[in-house]
Length: 215
Image 1 (spheres, helix red, strand yellow):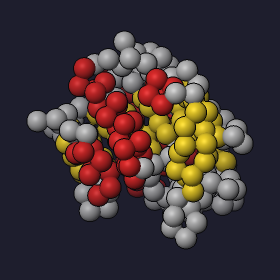
Image 2 (cartoon, one colour):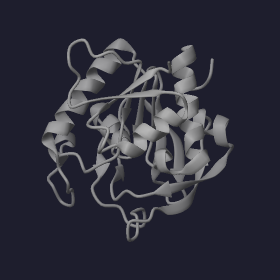
Image 3 (cartoon, helix red, strand yellow):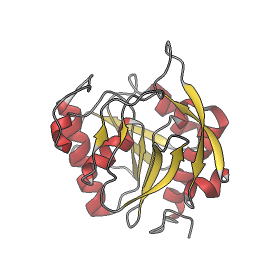
Image 4 (cartoon, helix red, strand yellow):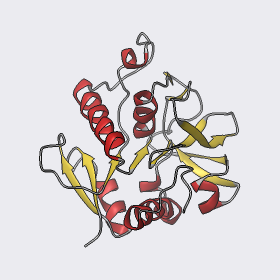
């Protein structure tokens, strides 16, 4: 059986993520909060509404879909993952949560990156030396459906990808097995599954390194 990937929430709410994890041989495990005895090999922090701005030192100027309970549960889970060295993949809101956890800040409303009428935008992005350049080369097309983005990068994080306007589209932690992307690989077809497969392969093999590259 494939490695288990914990997602805080329900299988119904995060069905796209469940299908994507299973498509690359993983097993998605769902619960509202990490409970004592919950067994998992990695964590996926999925997309969703905005974080409470006070958590990164700002007043609310444009944040919406706030869920304080989810913020608290995911940040507490990240603390345990950081302590244990558990691999984490952040997607969209998940990237923003990771950045805030490490002391970073967010732009509360960024133009030209949101979905239009429920359809993701697509744009080009440039990959820095990282797991993304290893997988996709120097440039790639990504899907875009977010209205917030990284402002100040958190401690220990390094940029893996930027959009043409400079927006950070991905990063990794320099010492911990943490990857994050602002786009949505779970609904980006074979190109998106390639990222999920690479993450799970590293979970299976333990081949995470401090640079985020394959050992």
